[in-house]
Image (cartoon, rainbow, N blue to C red; front, side, top):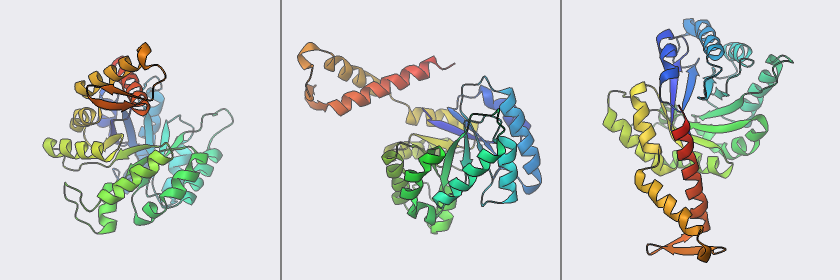
Length: 289
């Protein structure tokens, strides 16, 4: 599960030192927006050092590279591709060509000894990216695409809509990202909540993201991690209900049945499969140190 994925500035030594001990389900070492132009080389060195020092860490580690096929992007890929990140996050993806370009650079940057190719994550941050979601999702799997992230800050600016906490101007776009992610079996992550001092607002937006169908939320501060974990994790009520569904379908009398009655509600096989997934994820979370 990726309920909480924290952006960590790759040039911030204190933040990097603290990151492995946090309860985030994933980490994104940021070489793009979190760094000033003069910090890019320092950020690459920090990301390389972090990846080498945390090889035993079970938490997925993703590196966000720079955008727009720039010299900075090429330098990022050359530095990071062979260091074993879980994935490389490509910002401002507007077409499948953007992913293909990065993928080809990754292949060129690896040595023969470096057999593992990192997955690709795509940030959808522009109107053109939204319009091309089908092509990106459908064809991106050939290049290792495994996740969409909604770049809500850039989307609000590009769409010239209000960046209010309710995100009313973004809801249709966010739903499109979820639909395409689900259609092509990609993880879908919600965008960041900028006011890290507003815990109530972050919790409310995380709940909204969960209601929209996102798997989890990207974060900018460690204080937001428990809020996202709670919002996107199953409640005790959900866990109990899932266990009841599993137990009911295991009864002899229900063997082979498509739909059964549980507490006056019709439950189908699809709910049985969903219940099994929920319990499996819950067990994995319990086992994670």
